[in-house]
Length: 287
Image (tube, rainbow, N blue to C red):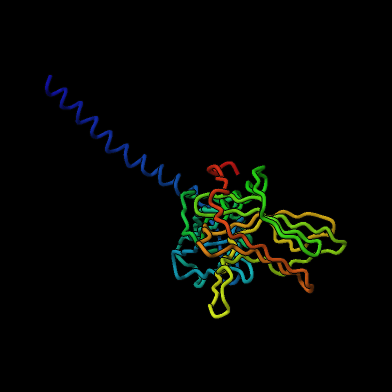
């Protein structure tokens, strides 16, 4: 009886050893199939188009040449540096927190000249950027939410030359503030924006005392249009790195007209921390 049990256990062990390599081979094939295969040549350039700007590029071999297209942030140019190179890979991270993996093969006769990265598998959505490279897609989504929110604040506006500049909403998500700005043109002449800037400035002091100002560069704005048509209103949301207004300083919103003199400055001296509305957690998969 003991001999039968021993033989039975040995049979199970042998079956497990034989079955495991087969399972591993199947898993390996499945993993390889999920990546986009791209054929590139030595005498032709292949373009890969992404939906969002490229943040990081890594090629598996020096036998492949890779660079971003001049003047654009979402197109990658690749070609072979050596004919008949050994199969390699290409890894790209884009600003919408997606990581793409491509398998590169040599084919000078019929290369893929135009590849859309949206057809590739995003290998990971768990890509985190430092604050200065904050996830662009998430910022865009939050700015869009801030634009549509009904929450409003009052008392922060400046009117001159029949032009009105108003801050009517402040929102926050993680370490980014979203300022909703209303531009109103009551005149009969279009207003073309040359500059719209944000500063943290010292409050007025004596002429002997040097004043300090720090400009805050927006991370994103909901529209790049610079026109405020006559008798109309334009609302924009600007995403800024989180800040507070220190004592004896104020926030300045500076609006400068292109080829004109209708300039406005809105100074905000009070701390705005109690005026901020939080934006609920953004689910990236819903967009």
